Amino acid sequence: MTQYGAWVLIHGYAIKHFTGYVNRQDTPKYADIEATATGLASLNVPMKPKIEGSKTVGLRQTATHAVTDMVRVLDDAIGEEIKIPWTYAYYEIAQRYLIKTDGVA
Image (tube, rainbow, N blue to C red; front, side, top):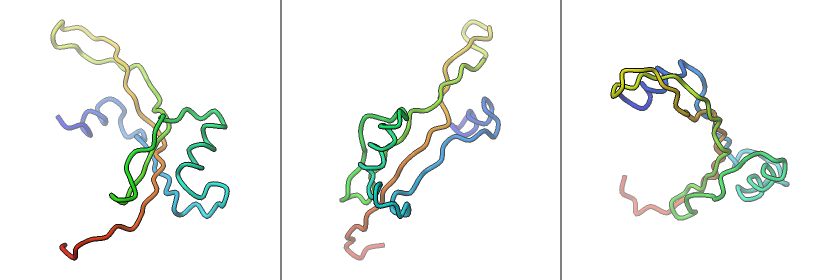
């Protein structure tokens, strides 16, 4: 089974995540990913502790913490239904950068 298949089996077509593109915010107060993440955290939005990626790879990103929901699944080992935590619905923040290429496609 694929990760997507497992998602649909447990959550149906509920939203997994959205991505906000910092480059298109056009808000001077939140001009980059650091300012945006700090601004959200100052409003008590639970944020991941670090920003991943780098300018050299062309992408830096972070996200809010995902919502955790308890879902019922069948445990094949014991043949019974159990509850497990399943995370979903987070907001990703991404900032993209131009990168140099050597002309190879």
